[in-house]
Amino acid sequence: MAAALTAATYGHSVLSGCAHPQSSQLEEQNMDTGNYLDKQRNNERFKRGWEKLKEIDGTAGERVIESLKNIAPDLGRYTIEFPFGDVYSRPGLDIKSREIATVAALTALGNAAPQLKVHIHAALNVGCSPQEVIEVIIQMAVYAGFPAAINAAFSAQEVFSERGITLA
Image (cartoon, one colour):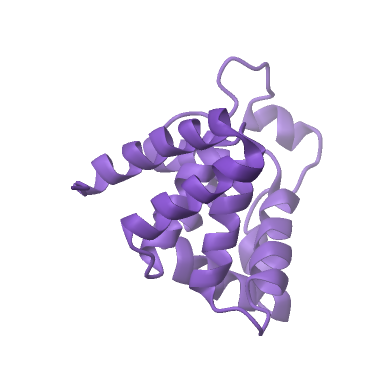
């Protein structure tokens, strides 16, 4: 989702450089791409997930889901229902703690810069300070290695710059 979120947020095609069918070809394949969000409005997982997505990512998250409707509407639905409707909505951790864990996990992966940037934005949206984000990244250097942490620090720097945040 984060690659799509980054792409949708900044106006890039997630599928740029890839051969993919045009919407008319999808229609010819009898894929129902219209109003799929409306069809899910009575689904409790979907409702819960949609509200959580808006809380965390705002309109950027909505744009990602919208960008999936013509190519993979079920992927959009799964993204709303499982991560946001089931996992992010669970009791036991507040949303700030969940975003800290997500930033840590994406930092440790070392190869998920678009998703990491999305979740750094989300962490800031839900109350993490820039210093907390940097501390999470530094902590991951111990377990994920310096290359992953350095790459994550550069991702954080890009996010902070976009938001006009400077660190002393």
